[in-house]
Image (cartoon, rainbow over all chains, first blue to last red):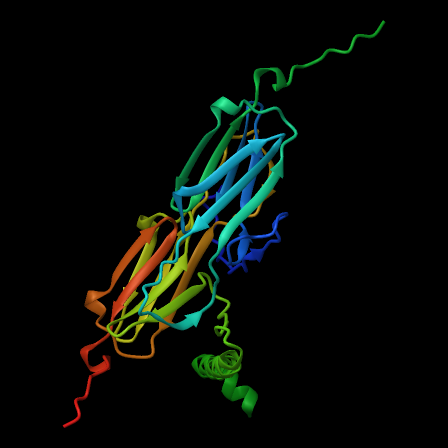
Length: 136
Length: 150
């Protein structure tokens, strides 16, 4: 499906977010664009976080709340002057509430080309079973 | 008359917009300077770019998360750099239910015209963590020269 798509990409403005707690370090905070999909055994989250290095990314899951945080380091050299600035850079922050029970030991995260691939396997108990309704 | 002129010559039409865009950028720069804020202008074409310069080079940066370097095509002329490519998002297994779909796939192409002559054969591009950096060396003639006072 994706292979046949040839539509032209439109620029998307980054969305700035207000984090629940006040920031202690300066700089803008943006919400990464995500794809979330679910199969019977797992939930997958893909998040665009360009400029974030693997060591600057933190993923935290507690009390059914998943928190994604990404810090970025400035890429410009000290002697560079701005000519044209169309996008801003800043940290990424996004939180999700997970309704399913996740097997925390088997969470897998990969960061490739600025895209986070996060696989959250559901615990065995939560995989749906078909319940037959009996009638008398 | 105007109508005919504009619509018979698409390049004229385009250069008119470029002129307006240039004026807008100048205005923004003046306004921005007084406030100490960087000029923010958008050409409305993907990818959005940040262009910086130092004495020897221009740097063009764009955020292209999920774009493979094989799917990028960068070309340079004496005063412009074109970036084109395709962002592919692999299809997921059947039966996957989408909860959010904010990431987009598609093709893109953009030409960035630089304010000075460049050395097209020495342009270098680097794609790291989803950020593309194109280093564009200025032509010798465009570099600032230190003038000594006798």
